[in-house]
Length: 429
Image (cartoon, rainbow, N blue to C red; front, side, top):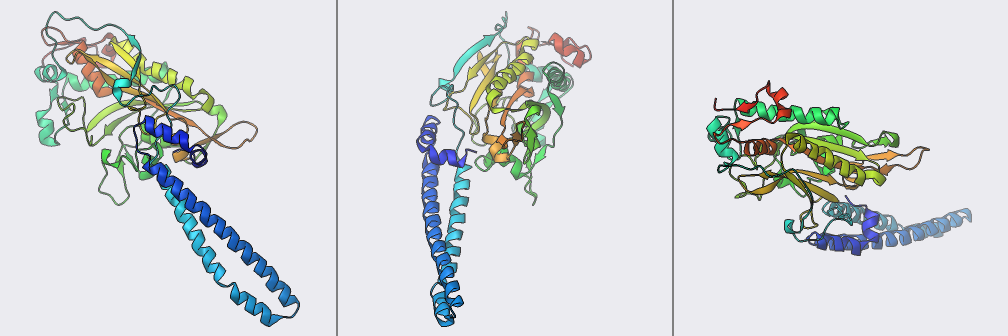
């Protein structure tokens, strides 16, 4: 959430940011009107309170002089002020509530380094790693490979749950588990993250804190429970909210967490996109990196977080690129985002496998996560960051497609073999 005073004092900056994001300024206009209403009722309330206080002094003086009848008459004359002031206070509270509601719908301000653009076509590539694999045969996609190997079953998953679900069997399931363990070991042992295993169900306050609610409720799976529970769309939600309503000591920052969770998304509005295979599922798995940072170092932390996620693909030996998202492709809560895109031979294209983002104080303000510097200074909001390290299902796809052989088998990347009980090749079971 943006700071109320910042929005009030920088209306044109916020308006320009909304324009860059291709978003309507209607909520900002409503905010301005609510703020004007608030200012008017406060001014009127102050005037009436001053009148009431002056009358009270007059009444007190009349009572001291023994002029009880005059005092009673004066008291009766100003008696209506109490009700008027109460009504004005109610209108002030209503205006302030409306302003907070509108603030919750305004997106973050893009960082100055974010390229301007209307959509993903304006994203800017900043680097590539590795080389495309070369095949002396026509490479197949992960669905044909997985089904032929007996490690992917989409038909029975549809029977059991519905469209956009998958079942992994045998070496396919083991490969998924190997990727999870490999990523967790890498980030904890080499990159200094502390592992956590959070709940896979969260409440409304947690989803508000990270920005999914109220604007993106249609993307979530809500449980039919009077307590208002939701399935996690990503580990970002429970892990970022770990310190909600807390004040941290500045000396502890940065704090670095890594978490594995299944993720659940309705994929509202994406029907017709990526319907083949396991690229876009209602249920998938991720290893997520989350950081809490000092404001002055959060962009250095973004760079290191992105490098940590890239390291997974480097060790696997898979070609990828990193792009900076434009203002038109930037997420609601994000100030800046790097997408890591992995090469998929079947599509002859790069596909997103991780988004690494700095939210600055946007999420921390919503979740009230603060820190205090040494010397007992005033609490400040932390900066929060997160990124997939990586999306496990899409990494599974990338392994199958990039390491496929002419006979349909899959060479297992060497770094995964210790997690695969030494299996070097996936063949038909």
